[in-house]
Length: 144
Ligand SMILES: [Ca+2]
Image (cartoon, rainbow, N blue to C red):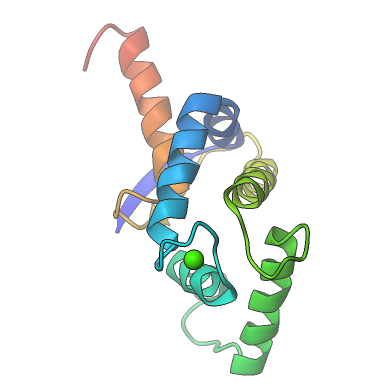
């Protein structure tokens, strides 16, 4: 677990950098596609969402979301990813939904930088966004 400092424009720059963003999405997708069939099943996506810890971090440690509610949440998220309702999420669907989610996060962050705890497993998009920003700053000042 690491901490990064982000604001909306950091995240937006990451998403807007087609090369970096596509590569990140591809790596993530490959890591999530556990059986390697080229699409994400409901179970594979759910596993991914669980690693994001979406539903724990927001509410603190005291509140526990009922399992049925969590299942319903995962289902509705899956349906958002599965644009053509084929029952699985392909690479394009994954990329476009990740882009939408990241831009929504960017809007939520606005222009005041905040600290965010991220998984330090090399797959956190927010960490990658922060790293990209750091590289740019390092580049602008002529080194590390
Ligand atoms: Ca799969």
